[in-house]
Image 1: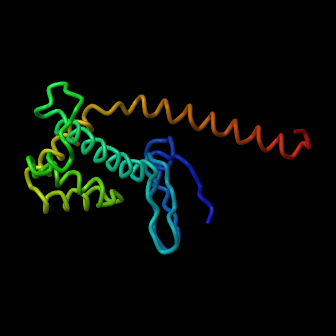
Image 2 (image 1 turned 60 degrees about the vertical axis):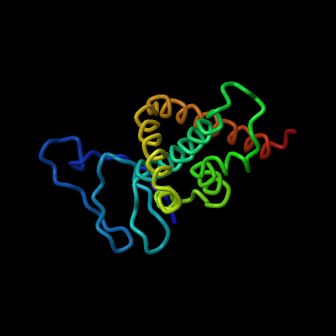
Image 3 (image 1 turned 120 degrees about the horizontal axis):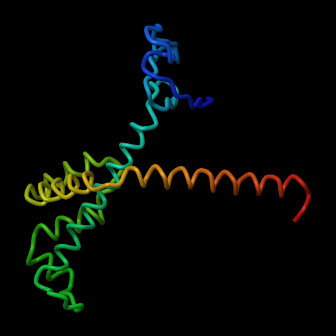
Length: 173
């Protein structure tokens, strides 16, 4: 189906006291709020683009927390020595390291909550460490910069696609 991207304030219009504009979408009542409404596949309810982005950012921050904790493990006992002990040795020395390697290599990070649940099953101490690092990453994440980069990327990609379209349809090579 068609995706309509529109913004609307919580009251449905800019005037105070205006009735809330509701509409029916695939049998569901939709009350727009100040968010970008994005319909989903048949039978689903619309989600807001910001909510979908939040889920992906949580996934990214979960991955980042795993990479940070892995780097911390790699630094334990090495004090700048570039000749790290073999992975097998580190896994034997630190069971949490082995659990993290297993998670990163064998457990797909499609759902960050399921991934963290698996971490909790393997090693509660590792899972708590990952949760703390993920929380710190979220607190330090620069959302303003993300917004600026996103705007720049959309403009750049749109421009490039339109240039390719014009080039392909004008007969020029």
